[in-house]
Length: 443
Image 1: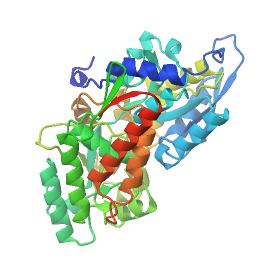
Image 2 (image 1 turned 135 degrees about the horizontal axis):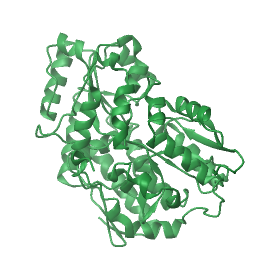
Image 3 (image 1 turned 60 degrees about the vertical axis):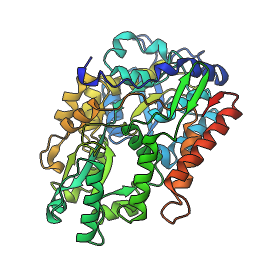
Image 4 (image 1 turned 90 degrees about the horizontal axis):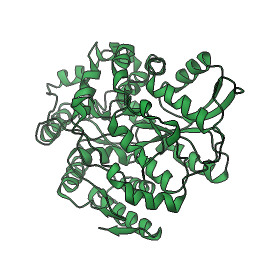
């Protein structure tokens, strides 16, 4: 095991008892399929795959060109928060879901608890698991069963316009106090410029911030879910971002929206608090700004390295698929082979940070650093990954939690809600949802 990750126990394994209750309620999916038959004597199998991650089409093309027994029919969907998850959920309910879907770590327990995915444990043998960051396996192991194939880890990072930081004589912030001071200096230097953005549509960015600060919103204790969103860490982060928004020090635009993109193109926004995968997104979105951007560690509260995890992709098999074995084989190829990683990174749009430790050098070698002026951004990601805080567990109803946060965050910029108030509303909605499901809750 990579020693730099040894401190990053993400505690999903500790939720096994409570999640076992959930999966017993929701079912473990249809395990009656023949697996799709991937042996050499089997007929060629065609699987359907829905996803949105950058570089996916190139990965599918590379796989189809090199495999005869499995063919992948790919459909690009909107990102999860932009409609992808709704599309997946509706398809599962209608019984016409694809054979494989992209799902981020935070959303996985929700689907599992509702019986939407298949247990793929028999296809994830120990030799495969050993290739992947143990913490990523833990995040996809619920109730003692494997529900998805992990693809990447997603440590936080700060992307910034180095030319404009120089122009405005602003030092790259190492702490959140320095970040606020830098935000004030940038606004003073150019009344139209802002250091970054509060994303009202993306609760996961805020959750990564509270994770980084040491919060632990969910904890499974026996058959009881303990929920704590009023801890000091969460309160500190919520108050801090409320202040930035109230004082007009950051923009409030939907993530990856035309408004956000335009503000980057015009220099109205000169920083982006994102994750490792954001490096490729920026490069693909702003090719005309090649050489003007750089990456720094995410600011921290005390100046010492610390990170949450922002998103991160896994691949899961919906319950009605009869081709689970073939779907899992494709997922394993995407996530644990050099050919799979190179196909994605070489697309020029992805800076994914593989959960498979041995593939990180291949990812680094395949990434074109020209957009970042030759900077070794993968070293920033490696350092960030080693500092991911311990103890964070995703809850079993993140759909409810995040929908409430998103609804409330959307009112913050206009003064119709506050960030602390949004967290309280999400807490109450989550407790009500789990109670409705008949689960024990302590808050």
